[in-house]
Amino acid sequence: MRNGALAMRPNRLLLLLACFTATAAHAAGERVFCCEDASGHKVCGDPLPQACYNRAYKEMSRSGVTRRDVEAPLTQEERARKALEEKAKRDAEARVAERQRRDKALLESYSSASEIEARRDLTMQGATQEINNLRRRERELVAERKSLDTRVAALKGKPAPPALREDITATDSELAALRSVIAQKTREADLIRQRFEDDRARFIELTGSTNPAR
Image (cartoon, rainbow, N blue to C red; front, side, top):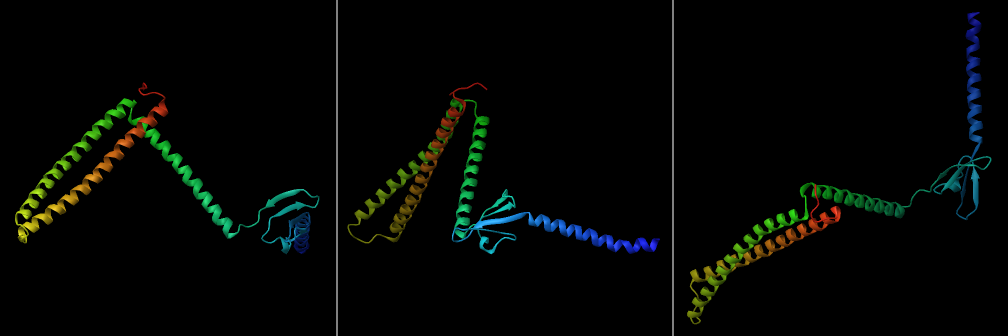
């Protein structure tokens, strides 16, 4: 009896395999793929017709019900344009996130617009003092340069001694470097002032008041 049962097992496996194959074939036969070919004519088939390669197509049931729409693969130009659009979107989102972060920091740092003004005045006081010190040294160098010019004029056309020429070169070099530093510090001070003005305007915009209570 055991031998008979063993003999029946291969037949049972074959039967199950046949049922599975028939079910898969039946399921495959229930769908059809349709697209428009290069001439604009509708082409359908199962499997996907060759005319539908690299084109948008629909997977449909035999009764005509659309199961899914498959978009055509993007061209190189379309992929490049999509990449640019996605980058622009990410950049815009990053700017929004940065603005939100700065707004949060601004509201946590100050309790009123007048507090921003006080911080601005204190910061600008230090920057202005530094620039004033530099300008004072600039005036000293200008005076020294005029004195050197006077000494050269006193020579009445004679060649200037090496020491005098060295003094002139050193003074001109220091004066040029100093003026470059003054210009840089002035730009920095302008940026600082503008940053505080922007913070003050944004604070008022966020709170609706120049002196809100906590």
